[in-house]
Length: 306
Image (tube, rainbow, N blue to C red; front, side, top):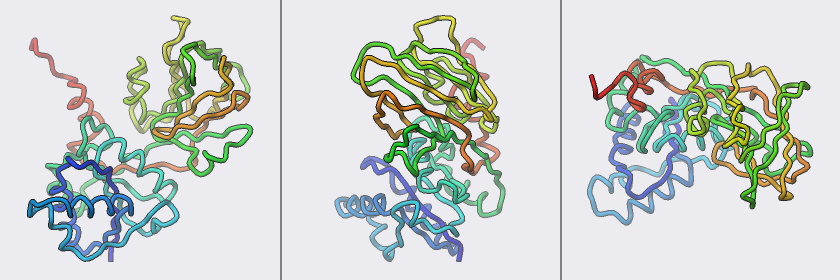
């Protein structure tokens, strides 16, 4: 029997009738379903509080199997369905890591650069998936090493969108000395520094004036946050470089974030960023390619004057 995992970000106001539609289609097509445990428990609590008949349907199913973390997630899962938004996919990556399980990202959120399959299109998109009419969008990740090692980051030392170095407990700028391999690049006087993957080029880096990069590109983007020197601009580099960073600040610690995970590091910590040894696969259909997503989300090719 084929096996599918389901993970979502629970918000009470989400229209879970679409999730029930997903379950119905998968069960009719002989899939064994395994839920992420925390999401499943919140769903069951939610259904017990609801009185709408459609919302209560989940209780009519037998108990589903669950997984709690990366170690619990079976290697033979064919696909992981995420129900939420881009942030849900970023969290799903921490369960998948190097298991090579593709993500079918259903957008029940807002913008949706990663979760590009709209919830209203679940039935049509699932039909395409079951017929094999899809491709994989292979996404590189950035991996982080610290010297000295930081126990909290161990095992989760990667990001699909970006690594960000930021100031902590101060309104003053920080200084980030930066090297590419062993060659000195620059000293950034700024609020922080972003090392973005191509996938993350439409995330934090974009809001800081960074370029949009095609997601399958083999690059990193180094982008300062509010730099003091106006001649400093975002830099696109090949991702075979190792980026070494050393922070100076008035405070004894600085912050490092890997997608949505934030850690506080001692000032003497050296941070190295390089290409992660694995990729994440996103399921993509013809009508939700990256170019079409730019057209839909950023209104490219549209002008009210024309």
